[in-house]
Image 1 (cartoon, rainbow, N blue to C red):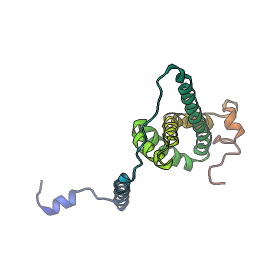
Image 2 (cartoon, rainbow, N blue to C red):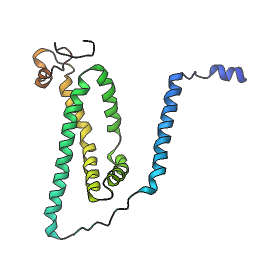
Image 3 (cartoon, rainbow, N blue to C red):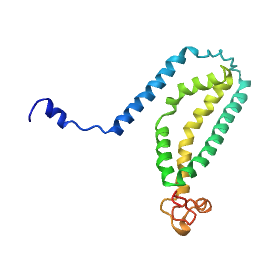
Length: 187
């Protein structure tokens, strides 16, 4: 194998301009997120100490609060999935954009959202209890929304259906790719 500067440069894989631009944009986005974090980390609102009673009489109230947090998160996740799933199934372009986005969001565990969610919602609520409640609802939402949205997408898209074997939802919304009302962006 010949040695020297010419051969090292000649044998290096060529970096395409698109890859260079994507790498630069990714680096700049990460740098902007880190800059915002360090710029605003001293502006955090200190949380007041919680006043929780551990008496048995408060247990039904705490159960009631937990139930309504779950109900609120489920309602928001259901609405999200009923909008996102059919939107992703409406065209091939939407599918190519929306499905990878939800796959990336699904791959981040809830613990990954936890610090940012607490910080954001507490800051929005100016340190009040509402911020903590909204953060809890958001975290519960993230634990169920991705699976629900993908389930709605699969049921609406009906990938292998033809004729009468199509799901009724897909036929009624004209979302099946083989149906006469299918919108693929070309018509």
